[in-house]
Length: 76
Image (cartoon, rainbow, N blue to C red):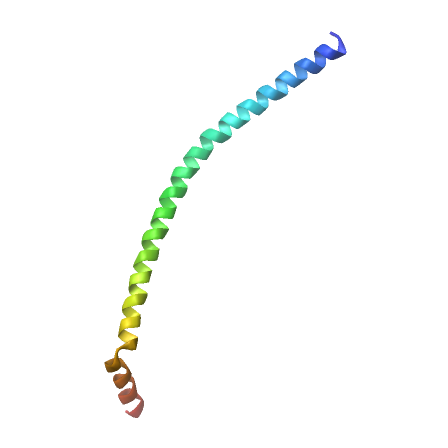
C-alpha cells in the first residue's frame, strides 16, 4: 500500500467515526430536549403558582386592616 492510499483509508475511517458520533449525538439530543422541555414546563407552572402566592401576600400586607392588627399586637 502506498502512503497516499493509507492516508485516504485513515481519513475515510475517521470520517466514518465522526459521522456515526454526530448521528448518536443528534439522537441523544432529542431525548434530552424532551426531558428539558418537561422540566421547563414544570418550572413555569411553579413560577406561576409562586407569583400568585406573592400577589396574595402583597394584598394582605398592604391592607390597612393588617397594619392596624400589627399595631394592636405591638401594644398588647
